[in-house]
Image 1 (spheres, rainbow, N blue to C red):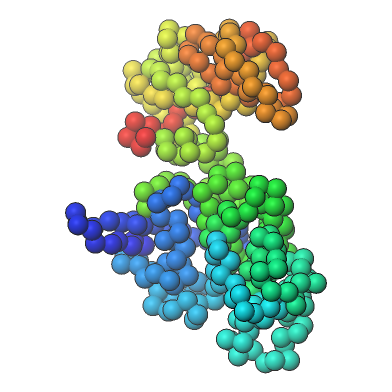
Image 2 (cartoon, rainbow, N blue to C red; image 1 turned 60 degrees about the horizontal axis):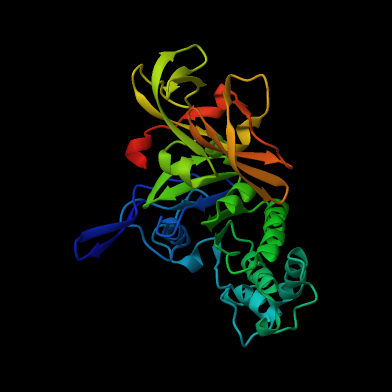
Length: 348
């Protein structure tokens, strides 16, 4: 589907040629920076926007022309959108009232959903009496009480401090697994998306750059943007000297390195960009496909990790080690951890 808006210069595509296939019971994230199109995509699914091109189906039913209240979805917004003049119980039960559910069902369903989100004792309180984390739980309870097919979450944790955000992140994943609902989750936080998702779509400038599991996207990025956006990485430019049965040999500053490629094989003589994740580089003598001498330029302790800046014959490399590390006089890594990034120059 596509969504476009007129501008003084022509037309701006907020979303362009986006196709998603989210499975029942899946935790699916839309990950991207501000302006990438992820929230617009969520609004198209929820019915708050109509696509200019394309269709939306939920459970096999075409819902493109249906308003939000007729779709079996519920959206949890970043600002919670709680009614200040209603109690927690009244806020949570409001969707039942709108759907004209029999009053006899209100009590049992309200009790069950408040218990599910771990706030059974807060039903009589006003939203203003709650912490940010508690308000988010109320918003989740209100979204779940009508048992939607799909729960849409638009950066629901971004307004919370780091400690509460981490706690709620774990609870949210457990909640999704307990209910077996389909979650579509919008976030700009890559760590959050990687920790929560069964699969995710990385978006950039209104398009989907890559869809896959967190491991697939981290280990085999499909474009330069994904490689740079997801996690930390070292990038090296080199020339392909030879193709081998396992991958290829690339020459960087006259140093041959064994490399692999996730997609199409390169050609001999081609200039390529290689990616090495900092944690895949080992410090000290080891049996590995690639080995280099190094000189430590800087060292930073970050909790349980040590981050090193090391000068090597192929350039400066960032190395991350568990625990406290000493001087990095030698470095090594496997060929499978030194991958050619597809179409680096055209996508950067």
